[in-house]
Length: 265
Image (cartoon, rainbow, N blue to C red):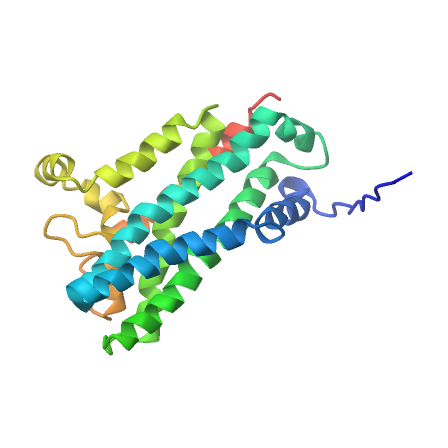
């Protein structure tokens, strides 16, 4: 007869943090005790580093830097939205969320546990690892003006852009029962720089560039990406999009916590 021993860890947190440590441990295990981290590392290295090598050989160093930031602006948010939505919707559809929330786990801790674990996982696999390798690649191809501090600040905007879509997916997964809205926004993120969308925005609503994260990593109209300024340690023309993106992330998390608090399981 085979018996399974389950170690129960008492939850010592109080108030809204009750169960946060256990929830975070569960979500971290989904990242680091499975093949997820390995798969994400390989995907990130292919899109961000291998494709950049092809651009280094064909278009030169300047084209490679732009390509690195563009791919980070396109692919990483899509991955973040898929992972985060599946993390919540998968549990909602399977009934696991209802079972977990019947334990000593507060609903804010349910959201924050997923945010922290997925945020750290994506930070390691889509920012730190490919960013570090890309820095060595840039230096190897003669981009000597890249300082470590400036480059790290630029990669900070890469992660901030990813965090925007991660928290957005978190909110959408609490507002809707399907993956359609999240995937639609991820697709729009790909299309926003196409002329039929970019030109009307620049003509009729240029203020959107100040309140959305689009210009953090991508050249939009005559505006160069802000991450490029930081990487080259040049003065930023504006910090408004950075502040606005941080505020969006906070708002998305607040709405997600508010919505899950009213969810009936």
